[in-house]
Length: 388
Ligand SMILES: Cc1ncc(COP(=O)(O)O)c(C=O)c1O
Image 1 (tube, rainbow, N blue to C red):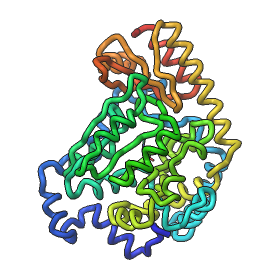
Image 2 (image 1 turned 45 degrees about the vertical axis):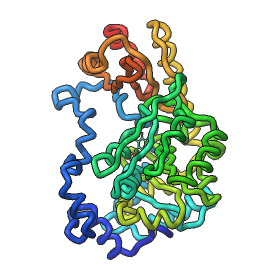
Image 3 (image 1 turned 180 degrees about the vertical axis):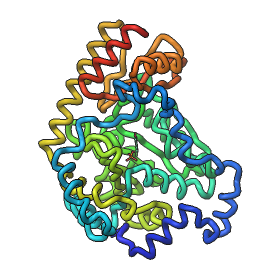
Image 4 (image 1 turned 90 degrees about the vertical axis):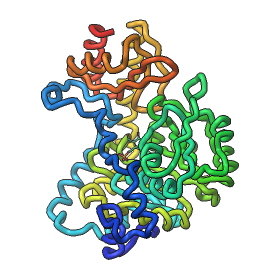
């Protein structure tokens, strides 16, 4: 398995990421000294810092696209049962989880990389593909974690505006690829617009563009689509194309705080990314047991999906009643235009205990609201009537 390194190799790999820069090749010492690399990754979490005085009053936590209907009862039970042996390193169980995913997706074991959340995979790709400069092509707006890290290292970030329907403009993205493009990052469904691109069009794009550069498809929200297997680009990886697919348990499985994620990728790329990833051993034993207990648990997943859709329908009605439009959503969050500066809107909503996020694009201010429990959506509706 691509990730089943022994403990010594794991310690060596993690030391590369956690201060062991002295042992890196010369290029990496230069990188570490470069001013562009001085911004610490966790600074990108500033948007979520609302101050301790506000936080305890939060009635609706709708700013991080979490799934409050998870994790499943089976996952919680597995966590409880795993605690007694959680003094042990999770040697075998991480591999068991990898084997389950490999079997479900029909992969060769060396095509899977696992990690504590997909952020670690995105970070590994950002480091690997930006270390020699070049550019990263993405839609705009999109999930900025990977390209933002890449530009803090050595890459240039080429942003391609979305189509008038707020979808990734695959034709324009393909045109933006040049001889210096190290990676194309596709977030499908796209965060923050919650839109999807046509599956066949994306498949054709992956097949063509991956001949010129690596295509990274972030499928964090794919479990919210009616048929994830029909929409995934994992098939492109299996057919041998130069494509990486990232997946996470953080969304529909409700594991954002537990941290389990993985990538499906060509074996040679897995070998190249592995030194920059925290790897299989970064997942905690309770998180692994929870994932083993709930992976592909259709009853739980369908139930969470149903509750998400009910809350989303309620939100659509609230927005319509207040005279607002919204971008139809394929995920557990919705983007809608607002009539005041985004920061003022989210501050006013936060004063009323409703946590949201805002964006500025297409000369407009937008709010992104995650789908929460019905009570949270009602708290949003109440505050929104006052603020809008
Ligand atoms: C598009 C996208 N990719 C990746 C992530 C990171 O997820 P994880 O919790 O697996 O690190 C997020 C988190 O919100 C996301 O929205």
